[in-house]
Image 1 (cartoon, rainbow, N blue to C red):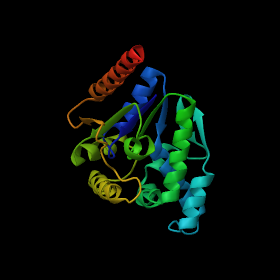
Image 2 (spheres, rainbow, N blue to C red):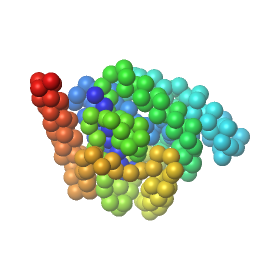
Image 3 (cartoon, one colour):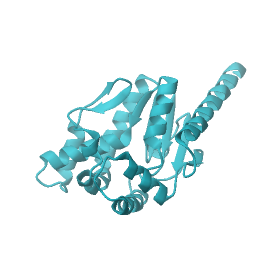
Image 4 (cartoon, rainbow, N blue to C red):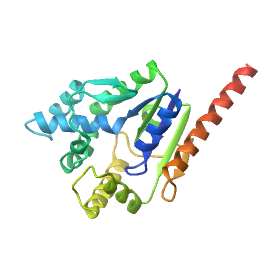
Length: 222
């Protein structure tokens, strides 16, 4: 089974996806971490971080492996670096390269062939897994999302800077020709602005359990 979770930054996708994956014994996959790892490698190794050939080469070279129920990217430093201002500045540019998206999407699909997965990102329900058994779109207001990112403590940016970064990222993600941020018509919509993480996780788990029940009923009638 593929549980696909989409939505903009700061809506709780990572926290919810990890919780749901642990609860069900599924593999947790954060597609955004793969793009950020690619950006980090480009900034570390490429002479020109805006050179398309260097960007694609980094995407092809980054090694991905499964560790303790999560997908890890080999050679990447701690999370503070991945979510720092330097990576934030470039990740949208790098992830807009069609070949980079193809590389990441292929790896995500390969992982889903091996076991049940909970995958979160920004085009998971619309592009990567359009036929996922469960699709969820998490949303929240910009103020709420900026505060959540600030309270994570993964960056030295001010709250105002984080808000500007999120607004710019949203605009860029929605305008992308490849992998644009959109809500799939058949995705369950959850506004997390005034919900606790436990509330959101409960809604997602309930959606999954109802889908499994429907599949079981369909199987009994075949």
